[in-house]
Image 1 (tube, helix red, strand yellow):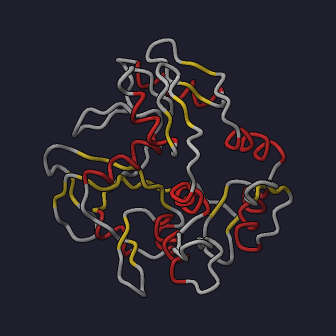
Image 2 (cartoon, rainbow, N blue to C red):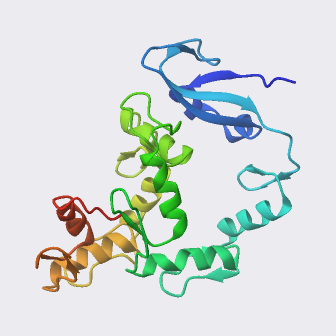
Length: 254
């Protein structure tokens, strides 16, 4: 049986409740012309979502209505609500549902990059990062932005990239009315309004929205420059400054 396909624009998608979307699959679509017709408001659009029915699942979260194809999927998801993760990183406190996921996370705390691209010399901490990166060099890569022709390494990266072509910022702060394209950015931002925020600089009292932002900010109070260019004796306080500098040599690390 062929799947039934419909389309919905960005604005209507944001208005739909979780109960309306729980049994649907939304895939990002775009076109140079307004060639899609929204099933909700009947308005033609060029960027939105293709909608298909999800196979019925009996594993639904009672707190947020998300559905899963397996009991384990629901169990691992439940840790997000209870924060009772069975495995937790001792360095950053992030929790994981399996020991395998924790093991994959640990390279993030290391500066070693053993996996190298033979084409552009980009380096990666894990093998999976190199494998997905190689799609960028594949001329037949189907995961490509139709608006700017950017080649992406996965469907999720393409969906994230497509938001750059949109001015829609659906995630809004109720306190200062800041808006964000990504929900994770709003979640991090809310730490700024928390009086008990743990990400506050003890030297200048600056309120940061995440641990990584606080660590980046603290480099301003230090004279250390731990990131060194392998081609020249240039040194930098922050890794992003070294990455930007390395583009001069055509050796970019991700």
